[in-house]
Image (cartoon, rainbow, N blue to C red; front, side, top):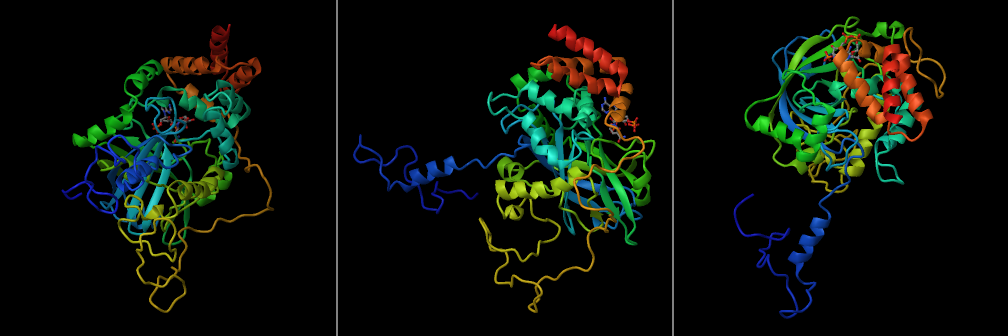
Length: 483
Ligand code: NDP
């Protein structure tokens, strides 16, 4: 901003910013005091609807560097040459808390990454966990209602949380993960990110591969205990946001080693797990992670509202060579994210500096709407046209997915080892004794708060099915607390 006098929004100087204009020294204020009215009216409108989930966030710009040739699997141009660098913006978040909530809480962390590529923005809207609570987007609003405040009590209710999880056994894997040590990262720098969903990569020859992304922290994994986090949430609710900003200001740029797991298209039908089920991982032994790059965060945003609050990410923002999989959570998100932005930021949210393409330009025939910036000048707004307007390209971003059968509300196809408990059990069994103890304790403390024995029993039973020892220890811990 240039130096000069304080002005109104229209640019006129403000003569007195201490005393409102009144009728006489002690009289009422005047409607002609436009600087006052404008100031109050603008202040009333400073907030936009906060995100229904992932409201609390912090972000930073960075650089993705490709370190391995992946052209055998994808024709994405930003992944085409070893050493190639792409600008990125990463927004971290908690899921359930409101905009002003504390950072150091037990909650998954959003890991939403925008690559500003020469073929448009590619958004990978991941989390710090490789799996999720549910596997079909139709359950998402119900699930989130149980995490948010109850409409009658105004508080988060253990009854709602455990009732839903107990009746949704597919959540057992993610809940085991969440109540383990990694459920409260020490900072945003000391945790992994995961694309979580399975995506499609396709190469020049049109061959299809299914891919999962992993971002392994180069800072090492560090977590907070429940007691440490409870204390920190009270004394420093902004701990994670501050840590990220200060580390970047110090020139300590956090980085992540980027890996992918690649599954040839033909494997999907017969793989032992449904590869499009968001409640499952692909065990590393089946599809070993392959290192392909490095992500570094190296620039703080100048303005949190403009660049973090108004940043938008959509899993539907693909680029040539990358596309969706039939994962039913992903399919729902392909709609829900864009819809949320249109409501929350507006139809021209993509025009904001943080959201628009940086390495190319958007050439659409969309026009007008709230806060349209007139970017298209006098150009025609239809296609086909003979005035040199933008034309359609001749190749879809992704390859078609073969389908068969009839429409209907189907359960996902069953695979040999698909059940809701096997991977939760695998996770439990790989923990050390200390880790198991903390996991059981964290779960028991929360389950013990429910008001009805059947809700607690159903919750415990899911963990028993994951692993007998897990269930036994949890049952005794809950009983000891509930008496
Ligand atoms: P894998 O070797 O495939 O996976 C083991 C992975 O578990 C590790 O590489 C590490 O992931 C992760 N892990 C280690 N400690 C913890 C912890 N305390 N909390 C959460 N994750 C941890 O073995 P399995 O296939 O037998 O998988 C066992 C379980 O590991 C799975 O059920 C899943 O819950 C979990 N896991 C698996 C991942 C995968 O992609 N296969 C990824 C993350 C977790 P990382 O290397 O990413 O830090």
